[in-house]
Amino acid sequence: MKKNVLVIMAAGIGSRFGGIKQLTPVGPGGEIIMEYSIYDAIRAGFKKIIFIIRKDIEEDFKTIIGNRISKYIETEYVLQDINHLPKGFQKPEGRTKPWGTGQAILSCMGKIDAPFAVINADDYYGREGFQAIYNFLSNPMETEKKYHFCMAGFVLGNTLSEYGAVTRGVCKVNVDGSLADIVETSNIYKDGSSAYVEKNGKQPIDFNSPVSMNMWGFTPEILTELYNRFPAFLDRSKSNPLTAEYLLPEVVNNLIKEGLATVSVLHTNDKWFGVTYQEDKQFVMDSFTALTEQGVYPKYLFPDK
Image (cartoon, rainbow, N blue to C red; front, side, top):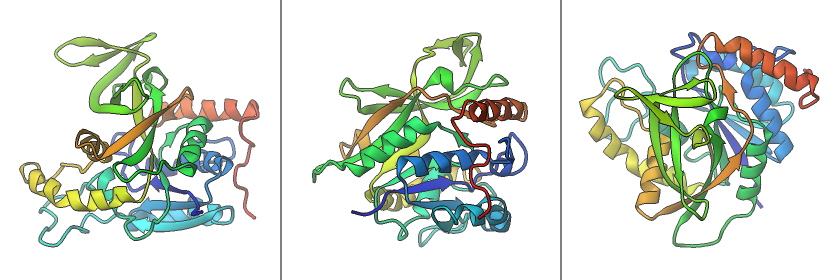
């Protein structure tokens, strides 16, 4: 049986936070957020990690985390390159923004031949989601008619920042627990124990709505779909050449609507947190200190061997 792989998308630039936010220490032992994800993934059973990074952060990345982690689990690196485009396409003049999560995962083409999970580098997900996705990937559904993927479904109220509005993939879930639709919804903010969307005024949104935080479980077939659909996206992006993004959730959504895939929503009650705004950093640091004091994590996750 092929071993399940964890793919960590770490090529993004934290535009609102400033700097390469993935590499900001937040743990009591100087850990960065993704170290907690890696620790939880190893506990869940994952045996290999692929880091998707940019060439210009490769040296820092390996120094701060990669070289240490490689002593605990098999690691590999894939570079997301803004110039890596299908034949017949060129990077638009003036474009500096990466092409998005769809191209990030597409960068792994030829590197993965096993079921794999996908996460953001700068999000804390909690242990529950990793275990649920690992178990799903370890028990594949055999059918020739559809792809069977999965997604960790977080409670909206557990993913909001105290310091500003956020964008979330708000999910509609079928009665059988499969994903019906993801609607990328921006300007969601918290007000006490309620949530609202700023859209033509203040609109309430269910605090308990399931949301996607880009924690997925896939089989390698998703790579072929991303490859085949990328040229059409690039054609459409010509009206917005500098900022259009090839987004993984949109591709998944299209596969569902075309009847090519089912996505099981694996509910998790863990509290998500991340550094969306500079002010979030202290809350995140305090949260990891508390989790360490509660015995959820050791003080040093991956000490030098």
